[in-house]
Length: 403
Image (tube, rainbow, N blue to C red):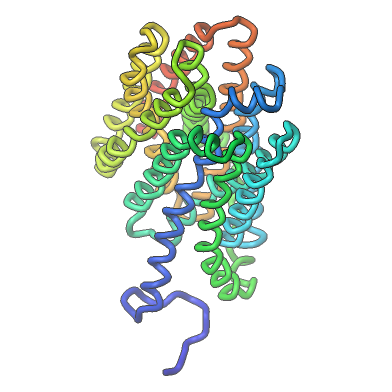
């Protein structure tokens, strides 16, 4: 049999080789999704144990959940440039390498190495955050909604598993830092699966094709209504998501729950989002139900924060369910981003803008909320701020669905 040279992909249905590539690509999307929140979600339930072990102060405690969001902003802003320089798949492979190495570094019992490992790992995660909508658009064009659902559900499963298992794994390994570093193993698996796709893409690209791809700068989009709305909504949902992911177990522990139960509540919050996400994404696939889908999840988010602020800790299950439904703003917004633009370069530009500036604004969430609690001695005022941001998120969701 005469082999055709590596280059343009074969048409669908021509031989088993393309089918294998598609299957590996789908598996890679799932594995990457599983790892994109695990390194963050596993840290929240261990904050008390980490602070006891490493003996860092309130400033470091507030910085720890903030560093990932800042990395998302800074490294995310460079993603379009990186993709332009090395290609989409090699950029994602490099990001997975950084994620794996950064998580592994956190095994060292040192506040400095904890921060350094977090910066390295979360910078890799940031590149994946921005690049994956373009990857899905480019390689799964006819099933973008389905693959976006698969991708976001995988993220939720990874975050849920990490939240629930963080304390038991750390206890089994005898150290919270080793418990954090353990999540480098699944990241290494994702890298191993994706690496052949990156190599295949690199071999098939002689450089000319990549140079011919027009670069679309994200920054002019700031002058457009669409760019502003997407960025503002991304900032609001990320403020809420990372403020809660970082501090929810701490809030529950401060109100009397033990650390393991608080970790389970964080896991429950993310678990309930899986079926809700599937339903809401199915609704979003019908244009006349898109706004309804956004308003349902935003209403649940607002209700959850009201309950968290005013109800006793015994209501934690209900609070977790409502806030878990509220986290579905993210997959809906990612679906809109993946559908935006006429080319993958335009999609990358909007994704870069929304995520880099959005995460920069969202960094005020985990840092500001933690600092308010440290200064005031309770979470009341911090939760009032969360309520206001949640209300703003609902207004922005209503507006973005008309853009």
